[in-house]
Amino acid sequence: MSTAKSATAAPPDILRAAALELVVTDLEASRNFYHDVLGLLITFENAEEIHLRAFEEYLHHSLVLRKGPAAAVRRISYRVRSPRDLDAAERYFGELGVRVERRAKGSTRGLGELVHVQDPLGFPLEFFCEAEHVERYTQRYDAFGAATLLRLDHFNILTPDIPAARQYLLDLNFKVSEEIRDELGTTFASWMYRKPSVHDIALTQGDGPRLHHFAFNVQERHEILHICDHLGALRQSERIERGPGRHGVSNAFYLYMRDPDGHRVEVFTANYYTGDPDNPVKIWSVHDNQRRSWWGHSIIPSWYTEASGVLNLDDELQPVATHQGSIELKATVGADGY
Ligand code: 4SX
Ligand code: FE2
Image 1 (cartoon, rainbow, N blue to C red):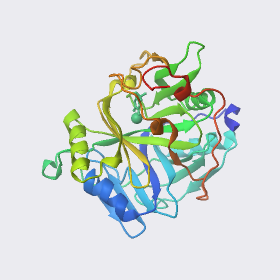
Image 2: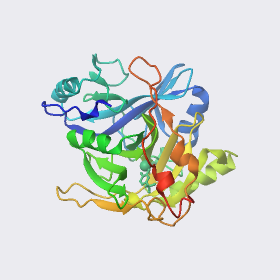
Image 3: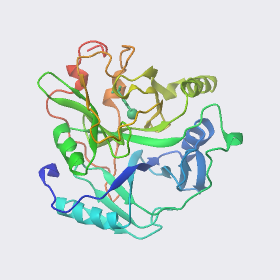
């Protein structure tokens, strides 16, 4: 892994997790799930791609669905503060020795100039600053459903070497909010942020690079319960993988679903503020059976083992490296049932 390499250039000023692009095998089935069932708004669509956004998002999209031969993750996008930060990203990742490509405005519909990077962990990152602004739906209550997704909040990635991944993100000026460790100090999972919330990205130990899930906020717990009832009424209960429940880590009330291609999406409420510079880090023991489920429920093994593969910048599936040593699934005693 090339994560040991460090750069002397300043890292880009990353604002937040902003968007992702999924390759899906049946665009109509995905449109049905994300638009008809979960209610995301469609900014643009054609026979090849659909650009969606949530109700408190003012940029062109936070989710792109692209028709393709095999399910995968094509881009993980961060917004940066200024156009100068695109130069910074280009220099920074160039010094890390990974593949970096500058792309002209419009190469991703709705976004300005881009920097695409194959990051040291193997993920296809997209950095953008300028974006097309779209109609504000914050108070379009006439268009709200019984559950209204508000904002894309975070990505959760699987990667084999958590200490290396954690250091790579610390170097990019992400901060840690919460962490799961064992008594020897081994870190199994880290929640890291740029915007003042619990996370923009979480690291989970496992075979990677793979995307574990992406997550949207809703305002109220009952909206999450409604999504479950709605899926039940549609006889699509197989979309529900884990929850509803309360996380120990982050304190969020959550639900995980699997889309028609198996990509995992979380809907959750709420978040807490982490913007003070001395915000304390919350450490959880890997043996605490309430860490991932505050109510102590066991976690279905698929949640630990299954995830989405990612593409490289040539749209080829990235090989997955297996983790060394113990993973949390095996290390856990108690609620997870192992
Ligand atoms: O399962 S965890 O309680 O560790 C957890 C998972 C906490 C916050 C999240 O967003 C998440 O996906
Ligand atoms: Fe999450």
